[in-house]
Length: 299
Image (tube, rainbow, N blue to C red; front, side):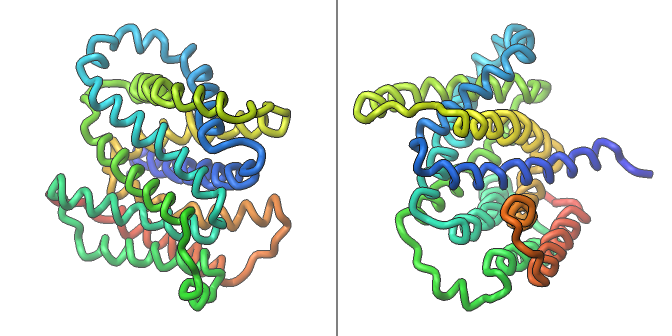
């Protein structure tokens, strides 16, 4: 008998990966139009405006509980919202999508390592095989079927920014384990967003004082609408729910889908042809995710 909630959880994690893949495309496209900090700030300001009408009643009813867990809220706001996305956008200024996606596919390995070190989670041999298979598929996609491409890559400042972003996202995913039982995900995301915006605000004001203000033209507004609604509100709620239901380690394997979706988006929006290495790499990613989620993680 099918577990509808479990199936919905896995579909939600796949959609989160799709929305975040689009976020990389937007970040790269706007690299010359808006600074990384301003893109991240306005993205989450708009996301908060979208969420508040639906979460205001929850925030009022959960106010005392949220105040008791202010340290967790602050840590989530810093790691997963304020710093992570700013560093990703900063990385995309100086590194290409090939390097950025290659580095980001390392994230699940950091999550699983954190699980093992801090939560004593034992990963089964079959799950190790699944992780290796998913990683292989991601590398095939990123290297466009030519592994010699990986040897020729030079890691610069942008790649170092990406490494820092990866550590922050792994930390955010592991911190979600400490979410108080019964605390609604939308309320936690809303208040974490408030903390992140308050942290970014002084830097925003200083940045606008030091440089020329960015004009939010229609192109930037459309891009902000996408990253605010899909890559922020929907993706984060789906991701947080998935981590809560199946754990950070298993949820992390869905990040390997981002290169797969990147290949699909390039066909739709750039008119590129589908190659055999894309089909093979995508099959490896999906097979690896199936193996990782086939067995239970033992403590």
